[in-house]
Length: 240
Image (cartoon, rainbow, N blue to C red; front, side, top):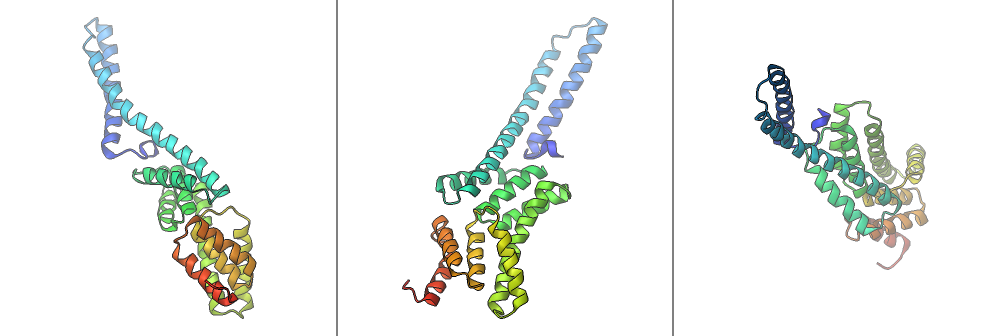
C-alpha cells in the first residue's frame, strides 16, 4: 500500500491502529453523548490516537520532503555533474531514502534516477524493477528503465565494435546509441566513461578524450576511466 511507503512495519501498525482507535473513540463519543453519559475519559483515547497517527504521519512528510529534495538535486547534478558538494548531497539523500522500505513507484523512480546519476546502475535496476512490479505503466519508472537500457546498449555495442572494428552494422548501431546518449544530460561517471569508450571505438578521439577527462574530473579514481585514459594515451603516443 503506497500510503505506507517508507514506513517501517511498527510505524505502519501505529498508523493503522491509531486510526482505528480514533474511529472507535469517535463512535463511542457519539453514543455516550446521545445517551447523556460521561464522555470525559474518551479524550484520553483521542489523545493517544492522535499521537499514534501523528508520528508516522510526520515520518511520511519527511520522506516526501526528502524525495522532492532528491529529485531537485538530481536535476541540478545532471546540469553540473562535476559539482562535488551537490553530488555528496545527492549521495546522502540516496542513502537516507534507500534505508526505507519504499513501495511508492514515483519515489522508487526518483531514487533510481539519482542512483544512475551517481553511477550505481545496479541499485537503480533493483528499484525500477520494484516500481514496475507495483505499477507496470508508471511513466517515471518506464523512463528510468529506458535510461538503463541506454547504458546497457552503449556498453554492449561498444564491446561489439571493439571486437569487430570492421563490422559496419555494429558501428552503425553504436553510432545511433552514441547520438542518443549525447543528446541527454549525463552525470554518471560510468556512463560518461562508456560514452568515451564508444567514441574511441568509432574513431572520435576528440570526443573520447573530452568525455574520459570529464569522468575523471567527477571521480579521479574510477578504474575503467583510468584504464581507458592510459589506453588512449598509448594509442596516441602521449606520455602517461
